[in-house]
Length: 129
Ligand SMILES: [Zn+2]
Image (cartoon, rainbow, N blue to C red; front, side):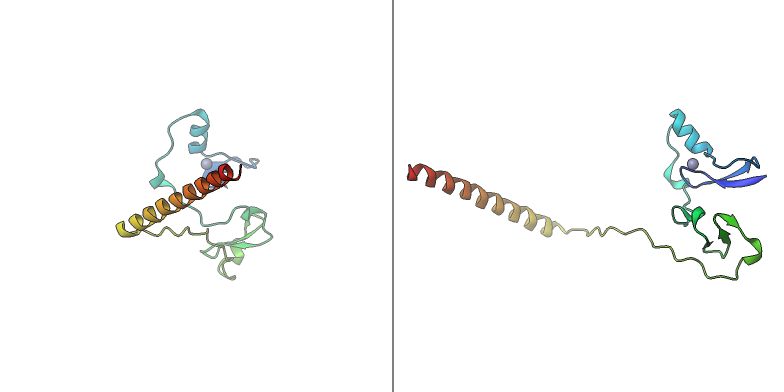
């Protein structure tokens, strides 16, 4: 029996037939059929980058070595884990109440200025005529 990564979400699927090349896990199958989505809390990322199967050599954080997605048990622990670029973290600055008020005020001033500009522009036009 084999284990394969689900082609959609990367979850390991056990008991895969020997000749199976791609597999869709039960969750993704359920989603395809339109069943309710799995709860987010059960999702465990593998920590492997997308497309690691196709890398000539990939070492996961536990020291498991893969050559083009095939595990090389003999090499386990002999190589340093392949560095995976962490996904970009979005900086979500929590704004304080004051900052929000200031931002709103500035926005208002900007709108006022813009409005005035427009009016000036219109007035100018009418004056010119
Ligand atoms: Zn899946």
